Length: 161
Image (cartoon, rainbow, N blue to C red; front, side, top):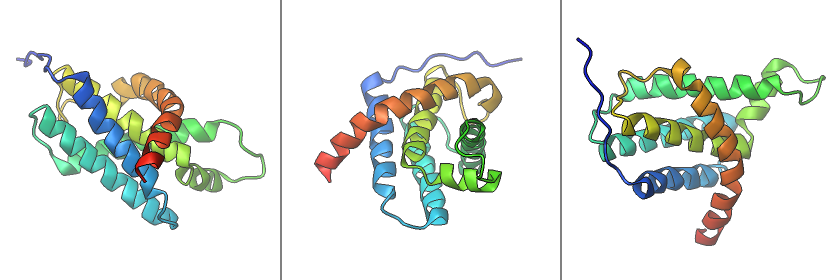
């Protein structure tokens, strides 16, 4: 028997505050000059953001499952981005490296991951029933929205820094 999902009442202000906080952290993360360290730091930021969202929505936080889901969403981001023509002279590996080191990618991905999971949790979902394929369309929309939102968030964070 399938368990009925119930919507959870968390204010959009709280939800957006959490996502915004971690987007700001991803902006600050760009100060780390090593690509692999950037990716490790980004994963850590996403894990902590999802842990905080899970706590806000009072759902269990299985860290390994969260990491797997984050990796799946980031893979979607990378594949969508490398499909866009950058330069014919770049190999796929170089394109991926360029994407992973892009400040806009890092920040927009953090935004999209946060917004996608917040929406899922708000509808009563958990990490166990999150389906990256079913969330891909919304995630892609949030990735595009994040590219627009990030400059505003970035200017706010520069005031803080």
